[in-house]
Image (cartoon, rainbow, N blue to C red; front, side, top):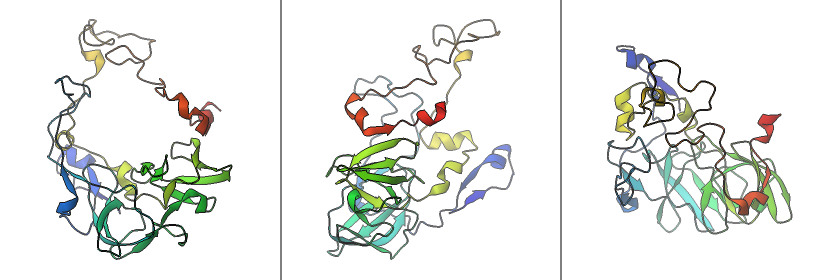
Length: 278
C-alpha cells in the first residue's frame, strides 16, 4: 500500500493525500455479514450531547467481524475489503465447511491465501493459536484479554504486540504504546502485524472530507466567551497565561491520567509512562 498525492489544483489539494486501495479486491460487502448502524450524532438516549463534534457524514453499514474464531479451522481468504468503521482492512474468509467470516486483515493476507486456527499448526503469519504456543519474540495482533471472549487488544491499522516472555501461566507482551503487560497464556492471538500500515500518514487536507467522516468543526476555547470555556473571555489579550490547558468543564486536557481500573494494575509490568520519565 502506498500514499497517493493529488495535483495541487487548489490549496486543499496541495496538502491532501489518500490511499491507493490497491489491496482491496471488491467494493461489494457480503450482505449476510452486514448490520444496520444508526447514527446518533454523539447524543445519548436523552438527546444530550455526550460526545462533541459528531454529526452528519456518509451513512454506514456495520461489518460483523468474528473476533473469536472457532478452533481447528482452515480458512481461505476470498476478498480483502474496506471497512468504514475501522482503520484496518478486513478479510472475507471461508472455512472448510463453506461458512463465511469477516476477520481483521494483516499485512500478509491476499486473495487465495489459507491460514489455520487451533493448536497443532505451523508458526506462520495469520495463523491463530494460544499465546503459550507462540515463540518468544513473535509479533502478534488481535489478542484476547479473557480466554473465549475474543480479540480485544491490538486491532488498529499497522499495530502489533511483541511476545517478550513466558512465566507462571502468563506471557509478557510489549504493547504498541510501549507498555509491558501480562496476559494469560491460554488467551488466543493471531501472528503478524495488522495491515494498512500507512493509515497514520494520511492527510485529510480539506474540511469537507472530515465532514463526510461525520466529524463536525472544533472551535478553540480562547475564542469563546468566559461562560463557555475556562480559556474564554477577555479583550483579545492573553488568556490564562501559565495555566495548563483545560476542557470546557475545567478538567486538565493534557497529562491527565484517566485510568481507573485497579483490578488489572497487577497485570502491568511496566507502564508506558516509565520510559518517558527517564
